[in-house]
Image 1 (tube, rainbow, N blue to C red):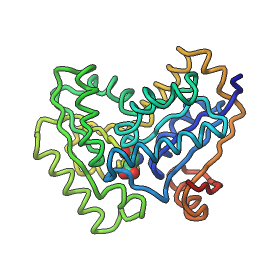
Image 2 (tube, rainbow, N blue to C red):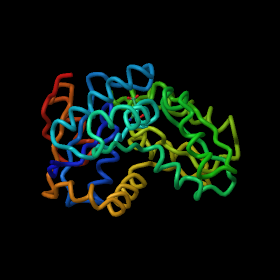
Image 3 (tube, helix red, strand yellow):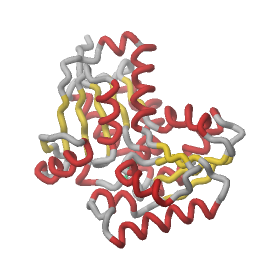
Image 4 (cartoon, rainbow, N blue to C red):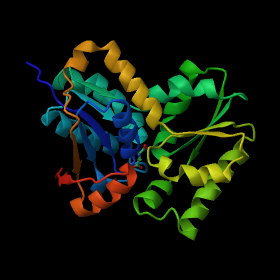
Amino acid sequence: MHKKGPIGVFDSGYGGLTVLKDIIAHLPQYDFIYLGDNARAPYGTRSFEVVYEYTLQAVNELFSRGCELVILACNTASAKALRSIQQNDLPKIDSQKRVLGVIRPSAEVIGQWTTTGHIGILATEGTVRSESYPLELQKFAADCVVVQHACPMWVSIIENDQQNTEAGKLFIKTDIEKLLLKDSEIDVIVLGCTHYPLIEDYILSLVPSSVKVVSQGGIVAEKLAEYLHRHPSMEKLCSKNAKIQFLTSENTKVFNLNASKFLGSEVYSEQIHF
Ligand code: DGL
């Protein structure tokens, strides 16, 4: 017997909060549990096996807390773990529960925004190496040229609040230049890591005004609303008391302080141990 429960939102760290913020704005009536595996972040440079193992642990934690639906608000986890969890683990755990990612919903709409047909993807090394964006975009924007660039330092820079330092800014600027050097016709840049919206303003200041910089939060929120509309049996299992709970594998004081900055409101978390 399935009971109503909150929607789980998972990320390796703080980045998923940029998605949660938009989801709450679109779907304020629902309950959510956010889980940040901050103690083991970043995931972007970790192997496929490790990202899969950590993500599955997080998903099971959210299921054990009553979630029927979990969103992997992390591109790296979506790229490296989602398919295995959906195909191999969910049938064994509970075939009615669902886990969704952020790459597919983004790929469904990105193609509409380019005029030149050249799309740039900025993401972690893991997401870039997985080729998930080019593969998914092939299904929805087959005529587009997709150019990827990995930014291995960005998640650490952002998790450590170094984005406004001279060194942090130089790393970010250099990566943007490298992407645009690969293809000068890019007119859409996808922030393919949920941490990157935190530096969106700085990125915008570095690219020509003709280039559109796309964050995923709004896209994922809209696609989740559509999903719930198309799946009324799942929608009925999502509790609606407008309650949000935060879990972190890190020290809660550190998490609360940083998460409040990401979310723009006070955060009180509970520590979990994997
Ligand atoms: N926010 C995660 C993503 O979207 C960051 C991954 C990491 O921990 O490196 O990919």
